[in-house]
Length: 384
Ligand code: NAD
Ligand code: MG
Image 1 (cartoon, protein in one colour):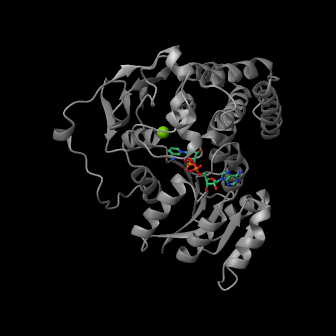
Image 2: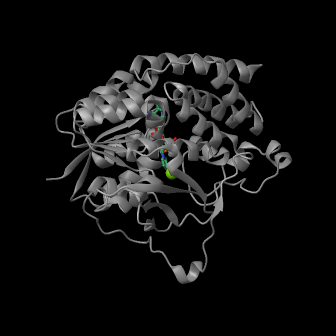
C-alpha cells in the first residue's frame, strides 16, 4: 500500500523537493493531491507527470487555464481557498505536507487535523501564529505532526528513543544568513538581491529574506517550543555558519544528541514521509575530513532584532506572535519589491507589535482578525 500524500504548495521549493522524494520512492509514496498558489504551468506539468486524483490552483483567475490543460486526464481541478481545505479532508489521503508559505497555511492545516490526517509540517508560520491552538487540535484528534524544517527534524531525530527523557535545552542552529558579520552601515545598504543569496540553502524567496533578518530563527524558536513542549529560555540559538549540525538536544545528564548532514531538505522531507523508517538516499554524504572544522557563535540580537522580537512575542503570548508574523509578511514582501530599506523591516515589525490590539485568547477567529489588523498597520507604515 502506497502512502497517499497531499502536497499543499507543490510548485514551491519544498513542494518540488517533496516530488523528487516521491519520484525516487514511487513504490512507497503517491502524490495524491497537488496544490499551488498561482504557478499554473508548473502545476499542470506536475499533474501530467504524477497523475494525482485532484489539483487545486488557489488563484481563481487561473482555474480555466488549468482545467483546460488537463481535460484529457481524469484529474479533478478545483480552485479557491475553501478547496484547499476540502482536499485535505479527502478520505484517501494518508498524510498532508504543508509546504505553502505564510499565514495562508493556517486554515488548510486545521482542516487536515480535524480530518485526522498526519501532518508533515513545513509551513512554520502556522505554528508561529497559532501554535497553542494547533497543538491542542493535534492532541484532541490524536494526529501526529512531523517536522520538515531541518532544525526541527534534527531535534525530532535526536529525540527518537529518548522521548521519555527530560530535555534540558535545545541547541537550535542557524547559519546566520548572508549578513552575519555586517555592520549597521552595511546592513542599511543591502539590496533584495544581496539578501536572496543564502550561503548554504536554496529556498523560496520569503524564507530566504526571513533568514537574512534572522526572523526565520525566531520563528523556529517558537516552532520548537510548540513542537517539543519546551520553554523559550530552553531554546538556545547557536550560529553555525557551515549548516552541518542541523540542531541538537541536551538532556538532564548533559548528553547532547545532534543530527548532522549536508544541507539538503530532501532528507527531512523524506524522513517525515517514512518515519519511523529511514529510506535510502543518494548523493548527500557528509565528508568530515573535507570539512575539517565546524564553528559555533552566539546570536547577535542587536544586529538582528527580529530574533529578539520572537522571544518577546512568545513571552507575551496570545495573539502577539500572530501580529509579528503578519507584520513580517508585509515587510518581507515590501523589501523584496524595493519599497523599504533593510533596517525598516525590524522597525515596522516592532511598531506594529506595539500598535496592534493585544488579545490573550488562543482562538482561531482572533488570529484572523489580528492578522488583518496587523497587515493594515504594517502596510500603512510601509507607505508612510
Ligand atoms: P515557496 O515560495 O518556494 O513555495 C510556496 C508554495 O506555496 C508554492 O507552491 C506556492 O504556489 C504556494 N502558495 C503560496 N501562496 C499561496 C496561497 N496564498 N495559497 C495557496 N498556495 C500558496 O516557499 P518554500 O520555500 O517552499 O516554503 C514553504 C514553507 O516551508 C514555508 O512556510 C517555509 O517557511 C517552510 N520551509 C521552507 C524551507 C525551504 O528550504 N524552502 C525550509 C524550511 C521550512
Ligand atoms: Mg529551518
